[in-house]
Image (tube, rainbow, N blue to C red; front, side):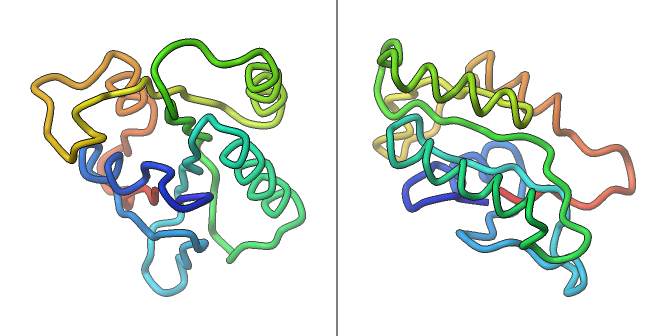
Length: 138
């Protein structure tokens, strides 16, 4: 599930085989996936948006049957995060499992890549569903 526009959930859904539900909670009662990845960019607005989504989960402001698998933070630029954003990521890690996706220049242009980055392959392994489980929402 995208926590804000441009988070990268559509790209991750395509490369990981998940379902992109946009910026709303999926509703398992309507047959939508209940296992959710909250996706955000690593910029200020993205880290704030994912914090708000985690708070909504904590308060129970989501459909029954929704289960958070992890927060996925997609790099908003190449290179290291500025210190204030790095601190926010540490706070997010205290509230949920966090996976970081590196900057992939080809994705910015809508291009496919030959091999997924190591972090994306690790994310795919971490969230892969056992046989018979529903797909995850991005």
